[in-house]
Each structure stands twice: as structure tokens, then as C-alpha cells.
Image (tube, rainbow over all chains, first blue to last red):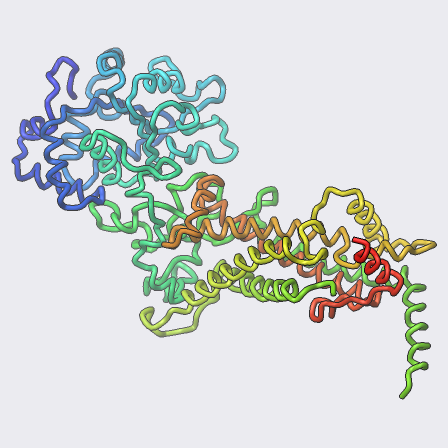
Length: 374
Length: 229
């Protein structure tokens, strides 16, 4: 853990100091360019900016969360990510990973906030509870909301790690007892990068940070504030099982022959067709696998309110305001049935009520028929 | 002439596309188990179903645009004015139709003027409502489609999903609205039969041939009125 008295080394200086070779450094730059989806000609630019940019001060706050984002981050592909970006250089404050604790830790944070006002990046992991005056989550005697607003004040930009900070995740699932709130609802005047996922892919997290470091500005974001490079495609549209989908070959249960053959998990409730993430292209744990490759459908963890949007293992559509068991099709069928019954009653009723009119018409028709020459 | 050829054309093309869209839509929502041992390489059945759905959606959409155009240049029964819901006449007729046709009450002295030549007010309002449901289908449908398309038209709708809170919600709305179309069709077809059979004006065949039987005295009035204008 760095202290604020140190001279601000450039990334390159720190990496070399750590004992990595220039070759390692260049490999790392290439990796990062690839993760960010850049052309190979951009590798030089990344290397150059890492050589010349002094480290970016980062404050990493933890609120209502499970630390799976940090876990994912430190497992990202290249050791330099964990070693340099996170552990050694950049992190001025992180509850989980810092050596200091208690008073010292809080002092270090406040020093960073003062010294690098308007320069530091605020990373937030976890949602912020607003219920009961924010008492559900307190750090160093202060509520999460107060701590967050204080840290956000002088931040250059805010990164919302994971679904908690981006969408509220499981804490915000109905009935949301703590009123867990994603951070973009609390701060409006700062650029916010949302990196949803439970957790987000480690390489994606590294890629986002590296983009800010290497280019000095935020990556291109979509309408929901997510980096386009990683959240521009649906899991479904990049999935290696997609050909089975197009062919109409689906696994019906988890233990049938089709499932063994690796057919599409669409009918088992895979949320890939509705979920924007890079899982299918970048994969997890050094590119080894991702849920669908392991035989389990996507649960849509990077989408808003994925806990409340219907069961994980069915393709049913929940209708708001109806009991849990009913889906759109049940409601539709019942309504159609009721309607058919109503129509039958109406037809019978019409025959009785409009009898006179109908009889008149029949009579007239008969008399007309008599007048036809034939 | 009540229903001009383009109006009838619109109606039947609508019937066709909505039927295709509903059927393929339900297949997409819950595909049948395929009993095939062929390799995925040689199969494209689900892709074809989706292609039909998207193709029919485009036809449905352009048909809708065409109908909007015709509501400006078409006759008075096709005009947008006939669908404008904020006039006193509309609402008088609305309550009348509710009383006589839905609640099945009888009048002592039926007034022929209460029987509409074009749509009655309840029908007008239901078509207006259906138009908005169709708009919802177009917006949510293209929103879900936008991401896989390179064309600017569907891309115009790529803001819908983020606004609603993601593809989950968008899909749910798209799916529920389909049922509204189905429920509408049931009632619509029944009421057309009902009017045909009770009023004997050729309600059903009017959508094929374009003509309805109208009392002689009313026709004269209409021609006279036209001459005066």
C-alpha cells in the first residue's frame, strides 16, 4: 500500500520497480489493448501513456456487497493487473485490500481526497442503503450515504463496480428492506461508469480502469452508462451455442440427451438473449469457461432487477400484479376463456332481447321472397 | 362505398401479418421440441421462424404507415377525423352503442340515425386503442431487434429498452401486448357477426366488397348534403 508522501511514480516506473521486465510490460500493454478491443497499433499508445502518466489515485469504497467484484478483479488474466494497478500503486483506500486499518486507514483516505481533489477516481462496490437514515451500512461511524457523498465530491469520475453499485442487485430485490440504492441515483453531477455483473469479468474491470489511465478519459458509454466495448452485445449473440438456437435444437431438461450434446439452453430459461455482457466472448477465469459453456443458462446478472424478472430456469414471462405462479400465457388463456364465455352469453342474451327485431326481419325477408319472380 | 379498396387491403394484410406474427411469436417464446438428428450445420428452422417474424413485422409496420397516409387522403370513413375521440357526437353514439348492443337494451322508437354508416363509436375507440397497442408492439419489437440489425430504421428504436429498464421488461410488454391482439380479434369477429346478423346490412361482406346496405332515405340525405357542399 502506497502512502501519500511517496513521489508519484509513473506506472512504468512502478512496474519495473516491482521486478517485472520491459518484456512483461509490453506483454501487459498488449493484453490490455486486446481486452479493450483496440487495434494492435494502439498498443504503443498504451505503453507510452503508462510510461509517462503518473499513477492515478484511486479510492475504492465497499458498501452493501459481497466483495465478489474485488475477488473477480484480482483474478484477472495478467498478474500485473492485480499486482500493480490494484495492490501496489493505485489503491489509496480499499477496506479489503489495504494493510492499514481503523484511524490510519481513514486518515489516508482523507489525505488522498484533499491532496488529489478533482483528480482521483472513486470506485464503488456495493449499493447504498437509504432506509432508516442509512443505518444498515456504516463505516467508521458514518453511514454509507454520507461517506459516499463526501468521497464523490472531489472525484474526477466514479466507477460503479458490479450490479450492486450499478443496479442494486440482490439487496434491492423486492421488497428491498434496506432501500438499497444504486449510486447513479445519488450523484448526478459526476461522470459515472456502470460496470454491472455479479461480479463483472475481471478483465472488463481492468480494461475500464486501463482505459481511464491510458487515455485520460472515460471509455465510450452506452445509454445506460456501460462501456460499449464490453456491454455492446448480448451474451446470446456472441454465444458459441448460438448455431443450435438458429437450428431450433434445444435442451429440454438439464439431464437429457440434447443437454449432453451441448444444445442451446434457451428453453431452460437462459437469459442470454436479454443480457448485455462480454461473458461469451471474453469468458471467465483466464478465458477458461463461462456459465453457458459449463451447461448452465445465463441468469442475466448484469441486467437491472434480474432477481425480480421471473424464474431463472423458465422462459415464462411474469405479469406484474398477478400471483407468482401465473405467467403471461396463463393470464392470456384464462382471459380468452372468460371472453369466449361472455360472448356466448351475449349471443344468447341478444337472441332473447332482440327477438322482436329479428322476427320482424325474418318476416320481411319472407314476404320479399314471395315477390321475387322465379 | 364505405370501405375503399386501400382500406380493405390494409385490413386483410393486417389480418395476415398479425396472424403470422402471433403464431411465430409464440413459437419463438416457447419453441417446440425438434425431433431431428441432423447436425446444426444443416438446420436453420428456428432462424427461418425468426426471419418470418421479422419480415412480417416490417410488412405490418409499413402497412401501418400506409394506413396513416390513407387517413389523410381517404374518404370520410377512413379519415383520421372519424377516429378523433373528443367530440360530443362520438360520446353520444358511444353510450347509445353500449346500451343497445352491449347491454342489449331495447328502444321504444329506434332511430335509424343512431346506426353508424362507418364504424360506430365503440368500434372507433377500440381501433384507436389497438393502434396504440400496435405502436407499443412496433416500439418494443424494434427495440429488441435493433441490436442485431445494421439498418438505421430499427436502430431508431434502440433507446426504448434502456428507458424501460432492460430487455427483460421490453420482452414482457411485447409478449403481453400480443395477447391483447388476440383478445381483440375474438371480440372483433364476434361483434362483426352480431351486427351483420342483427342489422342485416352486410357488415361482414363490407370488408370484402366495400359496400354496406344503408336505408334509402339516409342515402339521399348524404348525396344532397354532398351537393350542397
